[in-house]
Each structure stands twice: as structure tokens, then as C-alpha cells.
Length: 135
Image (cartoon, rainbow, N blue to C red):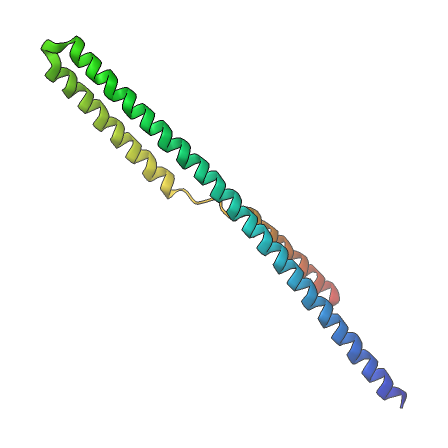
């Protein structure tokens, strides 16, 4: 009769341990999901800020450059074809440099989710250590 009671007690202990493990895994998953959401929100706000500043800067620079080209063309009216041609070459060259820069930047890997992935790797290492200790 004591064997049955001891057997049931160990089952309850095993069940409680499994419940604790599942609860721990769920808590870890929830924490990591919250971290991912936070990183996505931060990245979204950062990109929105960058894009709005870039669009504003590009608009202002374009207007300034157009005005400068027309001022030079008016100042050197006799050579206006040369002035417009020289600026056309400069604009095309600048555009090609920007395209090259965009290609090199696009080929670099993104840093998004690096923190989350490193935390998940640390969690996995800790779970493996605990599993080895339990053996």
C-alpha cells in the first residue's frame, strides 16, 4: 500500500515539474515576443523619422540646386548651354554615385532582431545546461 502512495506522489511531483517547465517556456516565449514587438515599434519610428527628414532635405536641396542653376545661367547667359550641360553631367554623376551607395547598403545584412536572437540563444544555452544537470 505504501508503494501505491509513493508511486502516486512521484507522478504528482513529475506532473508539477512538467507544469513548471511549460509555464517557464510560456513565460520565456511571451517575454521574447514582447521584445520583438518593442524592437519592431522602435524600428518603425526610426524609419519614419529618417524618411521624413530625407524627403524634406531632398526637396529643399532640389529647390536650391534648381535656383542656383538658373542664377548661373542668367549670370552667364552667353554660355547658358554650357552651364546647363555641365550641371546635367554633375547631376547624372551624383545620381549614379547614389545608386552605387544604395546597392552596397542594400547588400549589407539588417540588424533587426539581433537582440532578440541573442536572447533566444542565451535561453537555449541555459535550457541545455539545465537539461545536462538534470541527467
